[in-house]
Image (cartoon, rainbow, N blue to C red; front, side):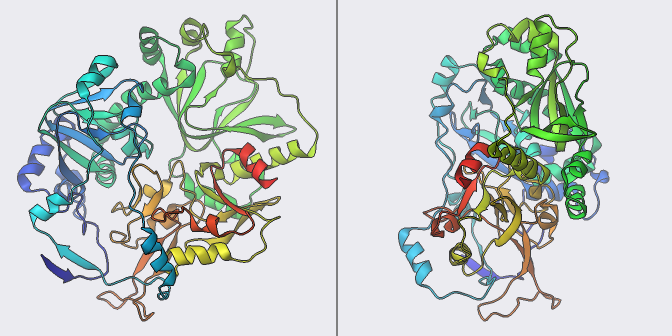
Length: 564
């Protein structure tokens, strides 16, 4: 093996997806696949040629019969095209527990953890010289991904509802486009199955520059997304296959809000963070008092449930993926009350995909056998302090859009003594480079800290040109690969919560590392949830007063309970 030291300034394709670029023959073969055949190379700018996107952002993957390609529930960010062989997908979750054994994570051993504590700290934002090892093909193959395991595919096909995928078919576009978990488990159905895998950055660039490809892939997304989302909807679990298919044929995809919502939101928060101002910025999906024309199922994103108060609106709840809106009103109409109107309104928080299921379909296939737990309970408004706190906390979390946070850092200010043990622990776990700032927005005794929340919808991923910021498969944590970050600051500018920082890196002497033109080199840094630590987030473990927690912030009940 040969080694070489290269310029510390990372570039777009320093790290091709497959370790090395695909050859011209393979690229030509991929561009002949129907989904790619209509793409015109002349539509792409000189700085981003189509050939280089396919060659560097794609790789070939080989599978044996029964080998797992993707697992339902895993976070994925790539699209697959079957070049040879075939695949089988599960049409139900009945056998998923056989293969959902969780993604593996590289963690420090106890010895490495103790050694880290005893080793003198480096200079802030120290980076070791980047040593690139040039491997031969045999070594490269040895380091291929371990894979996700193998299943008895004959048993799965015999005992579960499945669907077949054939040569030249595309799958995986849903998770790649929406940064959401995989919607189905897929297995190779024949030996020597060969697939082309295109990572999210390449898919994004081709979709942006090729109108033909965008139209084709978006149509596929809508078609499959509709079926998959309806299949996951809790209120449809008792519906049989024929009824389900009819519901899918009659339902519609709708989108609301603005995909580029983060910059507008930052400006709104900076100018005036009161409830009325923020609500006015959000697009109306349904208005209180309007006619009920169907049930809404949230496909992706978040929505605010509102209620009129005087001349404005207040927040009474929020919805996220797979939640439904207007079910009780639809049921009342079915039960013979034709003049029913919407009791609350609904607004898009950012960008929202919804599926509208006609009232006639609910009447025909859903209402019979619908479990009582899905009916709205009558809630008597309370006037005590706990209800006021709940209402105020809901407004606070929704207005600031913290409801996006899966692992938000919250500090209980009644218990925090300002010892900064959490910050020191974070620094120790990251070579004297703390990854959060102990400050943030507060409501009552709760402070939502400026630390990465590992969002349900991590919009920071959207613009990254190299894929340096990405979700870990299995855990879903949002992490940054320092070796592929080019310092463009796109993720930092996209983060709605200002939780990603750009830092100038240093050598072991504390001096700034300079590029070939004499300028400092910046990299993006943020909380990585201590994914490689045996004990989990160091900040939580270090707090002596139980004043800090990492929590799914949509669980308001649990949050209020922890706050006491």
